[in-house]
Amino acid sequence: MMAASANMNGGDHTVELIVRGASESAADGGSATSASEEITPLLTQSERPKINIFSVSRSRRKPRGQVIKVSETEISPVSQFILWVWNGSSYSGLICMTLSSITYFIMEVLSDNFTAQSIPLLETAFARCTVTVILSYIWLRRSGLPIFGATHPRNLLVLRALVGYLSLLSFIYCIQRIPFSQAIVLSFTTPIVASIMARIILQETLKIAEIGGLACSFVGMFFIFQQMLTTQGTEQTYYCGTFHPSWDVAGGLLKAEEASNINLRGSQHMYAVLIGLFSSISGGISYCLIKAAAKESDQPVVTVLSFGILASPAAGICTFAFEEFVLPGFYSLSLMIALGILSFLAEVLLARGLQLEKISKVANVQFIEAALSQLWGISTSRVAPSFGRLVGCLLILISVSCTMFLGPQKETE
Image 1 (cartoon, rainbow, N blue to C red):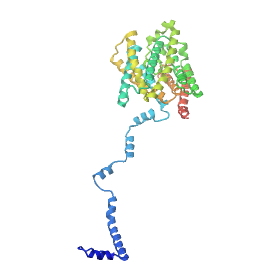
Image 2: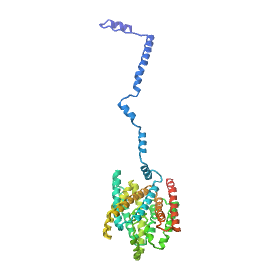
Image 3: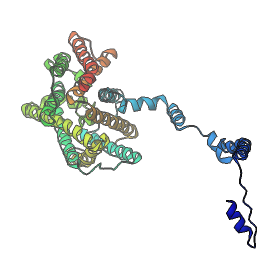
Image 4: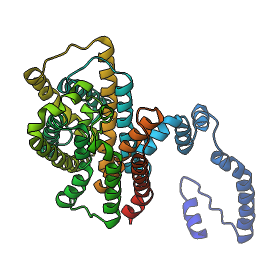
């Protein structure tokens, strides 16, 4: 390094090479270390959170989890209960069917206590189906769902509407031509037929406990209507079961004058009974179609809309073709609209129950409507209490309670 230094000194420019020893390097290193220590606080300052408008705005925001918890706590208890019933429990299917049967029972109570002018059955069916179509359309629009659902289950929806309307017409024909108690007993065979059809069509398992529950409830029905089957009295006009998902449009509408004319049509009794059996069979098939279509479309309201689209114009045509149209007054029209709204809610809950649970289980729950009707009649002194009625109600309540308690656990297993 010294020779190179001498050669460069011979030039025009002078270059100095400074050679430092180890001691000097150590001394410089110590000074550098001390300098870095002095600079370290300045470097770590960048790691501290900066205070500016962006950092302040972020610090004031709540974490995502806290926002979700706050939004959940802002939901009203009624909304939380509705969400829990709809899809928040393993019992949701059974609870929906129970609420559907209770809604049908409320319809019977309203029809009995708020009697208005006599409206033909087909005209009433037309009014309720029209209300059902309007409410179903509003429901689907507000939910942002397609009106007719997906493309692949549309054949099921068409079959559901067709079979359901045939069952409705058959029931109306039957209830006007045979004794009322016999028509009710025939209608209560629908849950049993639906369970058998579910085994054949949907390949659902039918266990001994479920068969026993249906048999117990149906025996309870015989105890309730035992006296009415042997003696036809005026109190028969109070009862009107609405088991079938389409039969609710005729619920509570059998008038006293129609009951008095039943015996005049005795020559067609056997034919009317066969029509009633056809109504029960088609009603059981309709249950299976509702379940299949609701599961395929993932929306039970679509099945209600499909039935209303067919039944509403068909019932209107049949009203003008086979019955005399009666212009309802304001009071009667208000009652018809109220019952139509309840009918829509009952049908939606029924379709949801069929979608979530086995048919044999939810079908047994429907018998609770008959027990509630009898207990209501006894409590309001409309029906004389008897041993048969009390035993029948007790059998139904025990059967339904066992289904509610044991059903979901066995289904999950």
